Amino acid sequence: MPQKPIGDGSLSSANDQNRFARGDEPKTSPSTDYQKHMAEHSGKDVLSSDVEIKGSIKFQKELLIDGKVEGEINSDGVLTIGENADIRGEIKTKSITVFGKVQGNITVAERCELKAKCTLQGDLKAARLVIEEGATFIGKSEVTSGTAAAKPTSRPEFVRHDEPVKAAFGARA
Image (cartoon, rainbow, N blue to C red):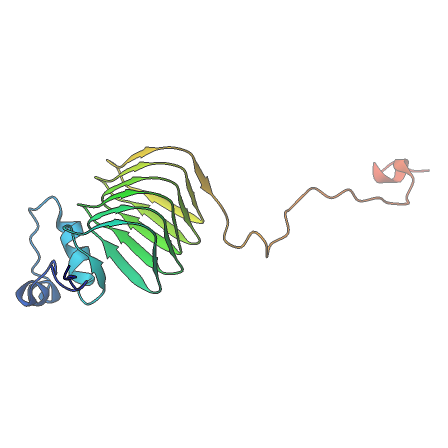
């Protein structure tokens, strides 16, 4: 069976790229933010909306998934879940932006951004979390400090002085 290269099914044309580069993007479309994001991803690795994968995905730098994935996604890179995406499985990555649907737990080392029309059904663990109004999130979230290991936890200190108690209150002996 012939395989389709990942680059096929590109989501923006050269004219779109030039138009976005000039800053003439349409202001009336409700998915303008998504279109802008897609234009920025031209030249990046893309799994377009007609792609369906069952199995695990590993990548190095940046990946935009706009199709269906059933399985694990692991990376130290940046992942974007497109508007048309339907992901069912665990996601572990450095950073993620979700425009589409995810059913499964997400763990990110740095930043997780849930966009206005996205749906996340699963638990979320991230150092930074941004949830836009209109996003649907069903699950538990844990926002962790990325530098927790570097900073000691601040606890109250007990200081013991060898002075008599009277002197501590300003009384004269």
